[in-house]
Amino acid sequence: MSENMSQSEVDDLNERLQAKRSEETPAEVNTPANHVIVVPYGTTVGELEQTYIFLVLEKNEGNKTKTAKELGVTVKTLYNKLHAYGYFGEPKTEGVNNASN
Image 1: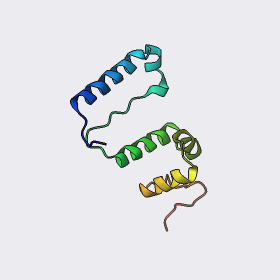
Image 2 (image 1 turned 30 degrees about the horizontal axis):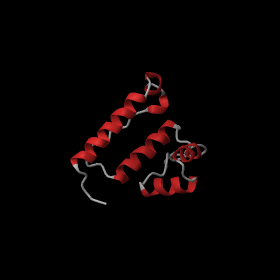
Image 3 (image 1 turned 180 degrees about the horizontal axis):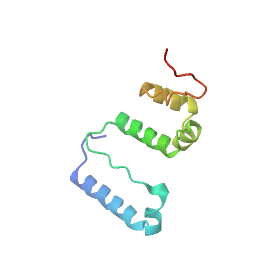
Image 4 (image 1 turned 90 degrees about the horizontal axis):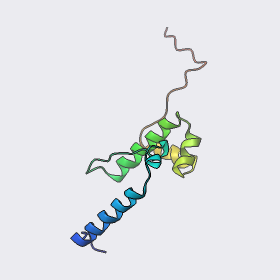
């Protein structure tokens, strides 16, 4: 497979994308399930994945089980990814005495 697309392949891809967009109805475009994420050129796949995981986690109010299900991964995989990103969640302070002596 060629690393670079020919101009005709790019044109064909653009036509197919525009045709797909024109098939969408306004009701589909405005539903919450159709949020749009703008990805700046130069963003790595890893950065995109991390951003998306955190967006879904926020949407699910920190519920990792719901987030994993929505992402199509196991909870263990989600925890592994969060750990790799340095995210350990909010510390649980309920029932902990935070007073300093």
